[in-house]
Length: 164
Image (cartoon, rainbow, N blue to C red; front, side, top):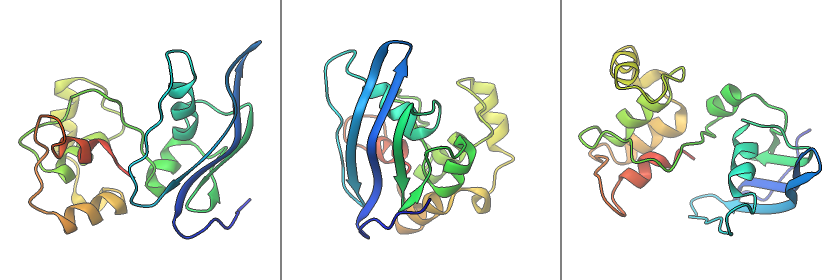
């Protein structure tokens, strides 16, 4: 199913729910994210924020609802296909390599899931070329080729963690 969303909407969740037995972790959540915006998702512990993000990223399937990315229904699309389309979930862990550029950090993250191991990250990175990085990552590095993922608040480490 393809739904035409306004050009400025890059991500939309429509009545997304996720149930675990009788527990409603996410219950009819609807939201839109505009292209180029910085959007926050806040709530108390147990409110379903991580579950919603896992659902958007494709790690778990929603029990109900629709997820649209760039106007296309990705509700049942596998994680690797979402990544190929430019939707990549990262985690709020400060594991970027501060001396690498944003592109190089994303190339490490875009591997065949090397995990959180140093050896996996270092050795797999050598087999990656910029031509294999998702289009969005290549585009960002072309706009800011000098960008380096610096450690610290509000540095480019945030850009390295945001892949969409």
